[in-house]
Length: 455
Image (tube, rainbow, N blue to C red):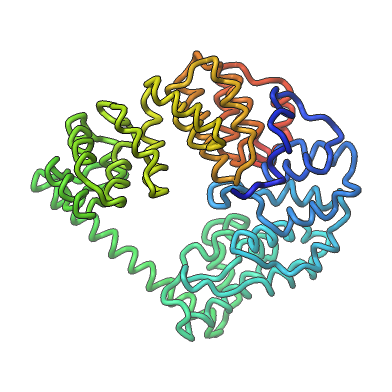
């Protein structure tokens, strides 16, 4: 197990109670706040400066430290403020954006915040950082450049994309290519400005041609969907207004679902788990008594994740000891729905044996109020961020469904220890809804990196 020193203290006993941070922050606390996004990092910087923390701020500017770069809001505004306070803007400008896509985009977004002070240097770095993104039929990153670079940047991006179209590196136009420009200058303005600047430039004209072809393609797809919908309505089989669809357009029978699970052809987990009946879940539970293939066991357990075993038996605990990691993980998710004392006993044992994530998950609906201290101490134990996130999700579920478990205390611990900003703010929303948000958390939220300007 990899320990993330930025997130966890040396000992769980150091943080048995949640209260406001102590200022000024020490370096470990500051580095942890940079990763989690807690407002205490900015509060410390504004009050005490950042002497001695410059390297940590630079790391936060060039590395995307968020838990989930796709789902959590970007942090370029608060990170740029930290860079200015730390006096490291020149050092940042000298760094070439590198790393994975999230890190490159984050670095460029932070750089764009300093365009007013360093216009030429910022634009140069942003242009040099842009590169083909063939898998997405686009260029990357373009948004930071288009947000601050004006018409010249727009023409630069269009010509670069035109080169990719002409040499065949991309096959179609990316309808979101100029989105950032139009967010600043108005819808449709990108094409108006390009038309005014392009003249007979073949690279820009290639963009216009590709856009025309893509618009026609999208229109034909829409007409086809509309025709299919009308035909279904005329035949008395309207398309369901749901976020999912069934294979073949109809819900499989119980027998078909069991056959698909047995053969490995079950590929409709989301709609099935969301809408399954007790009879269907009984059939899957019966199937688990006959299959040995770890993949089939895993898939059957996935089907039961939403509601758990219809008829819990002690023998179901055997899946927690399976040799396959995925089977064990899904077994924990399924058993977490049950409140049996046997599952509670298993969860507490797992915590005592340092299997913290599985232990907390099993206790989601089986824990008793006297178990709270052991559960919360497990949240603070070392672990990689994915493992801690599993514990956080279990605590959020426990706080929602178990009023006897002192939800306010659980939610405060989620706020403090969650590596995920979304989960941290789910805890905040729950505390607000129950009028239990501590004043110090309310104050810290005003500088929170996750919901910048909207705390």
